[in-house]
Image (cartoon, rainbow, N blue to C red; front, side, top):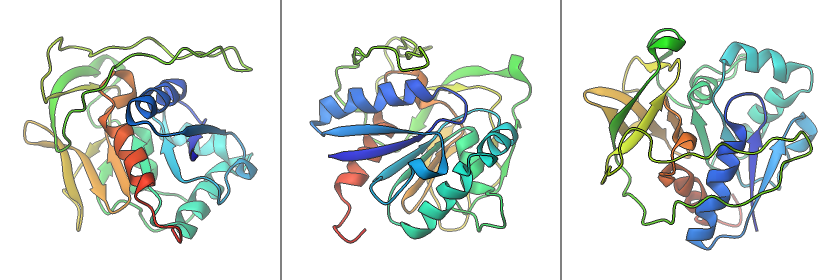
Length: 230
């Protein structure tokens, strides 16, 4: 059983859960998503982590009272080989961690660099991950204890994307540099919009708002490849 921790700070959290559970069926992985609301929810039994989008300053403040952000950083320090997917504001938390933590993604990043909410946009991007032949179907789930269910999403902006990825940019941050030791995994034209630094993957868009689930598949496949000592 793979246990994926999902930081319930802000953003499209339930859409991330939907994406993970759906692609897990295609990959035939047995997965449990653990909603992380307090620091005590995160422990060594979690194999991988998702840091969703939102507003990074608000996320830091919201996480402070429950100790979740400290627990996330402690977990990443204790388990450096376990994979983490950070999307939008989640990428900021990886590249610009608080509490004097060293960056987990060795790249410079700027908050809200594309502009305000009205400058949000959709565009096809090039991704260095092979497109999966997945069903793209949603996993039918009942509402959680707060009455939340995921949005129904599709291949936004491109009905026939081929290998292109339908990027959704919402008040997106921007990578200022390629980064030292980072692998560029996604581009919008010449713009770098996704990088990987070892077991950490950071993108400035929202893959959970499409049914192209190759980034969530990456997370599960990285977990599957972990050694028993990781």
